[in-house]
Image (cartoon, rainbow, N blue to C red; front, side, top):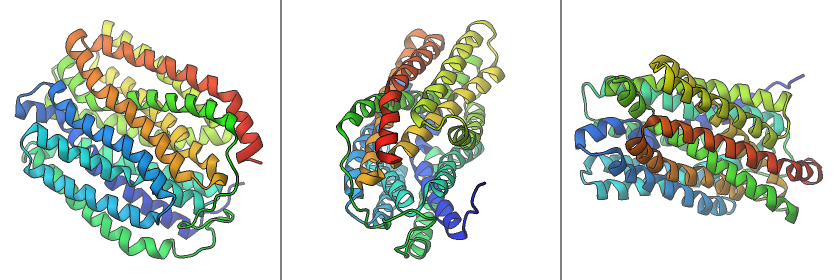
Amino acid sequence: MSKKISGRVRGISYLLMLVYFASYIMRINFAVMIVKVCSEMQMQKSALAIILTGLTVAYGIGQVLSGIVGDKIKPRTMIIGGLALASVCNIAMFFAHSVILMTVIWTVNGVAHSMLWPPIVRLLSSTLDDECYSYAIVRVSWGSSIATILLYSVCPMLLRVMSWRDIILICAAIGILILFLWVIFSKKLFIHESSIGGAEGNTPDNVNSTLPIPKYVFIPMILIMLGIILQGMLRDGVTNWIPSLLSESFGIAEEDAIFASVIPAIFSMVSFYVFNLLHRKVFRNEVFCSAVIFGGSLAFAIAMYAVNMMLSSAVLSVLIVAMIIACVHGINLMLISVVPKRFAKSGKVATFSGLFNACTYIGAAVATPVFARIAEVSGWGMTILSWAIIALLGLAVCLGAVPLWKRFRREYSDN
């Protein structure tokens, strides 16, 4: 029987959800509107993809550095710095008009957002036991889905009456508001040194190193990192170009194509709960659970290819893409949110969280321009086929990591 979740755990969960919401609002806003930006600036997708690539590369590298730093300084302070810098970058984007300047600003924005996820995971893992952590990480992940739903649903309407630059300025204002909320409420929620929910030993600002990591775990770690790179290619690579796919394949207006992308975001929000339940009740090994979900992604990608070649249905295409993205978010939950917690005994949760999350954006940095180029040269059919190949590779590497990961769980994290 599940334990009752305390008010403080709920408060921590939803405050950090707001932080993650702010991160997505100020990080994916440009990508959401890129089809409109291409039209207004009269540029090809591949020409503007460098702006998104700058952010993803900086975010990925920054994740590694922020993870290391995040195990040494107060995570509350790190989150304040990240939100503040991201807000400044969004304001600066309003005034930028050259691709070079926009790329520089958005690259710095990537650095700012890299300062948020490692301290979030550290705070949760050091203050919550497993059941409370599971509850909290799903709520925190909802922040990304809510932000995505909001942007994809509201931006098309706003783009009819204002420019994409004005919308980015509004996102900055939201970020500043949540920054103030974090400063006000986080000190109260994280002031107690005793664990919240039953976790032993560590406080949010002082995680103690206890046990060295066994060497054999580095083999499954490498395979897991490859799996994360592949899911990053699918997650951001597919999501960023959905509006373009709908606009170019079915002649849907740019604003309507952006709005249709809200459907995958809704599916993704539901998927966090569903796949978390699947992990806790059925596939308790998160790496094997990821392999199963990669298999689902493969099946849906093949179905999408068939629909694109034979039926040419916009509605069916959106629904299948929604299932692919939902599966990829489930993989993300397993490999980015659950796996780092298994290293709690090493006192390096933020380090591993940053390292693993960086792999997502290595994949995203590769996929965003590559998918754009494949679509321009070979069409969307070949692009969709590449999604199936990536899912198949993800399935293979996760299955390869399972045996040693089971041993690691048994001998180290669960012992």
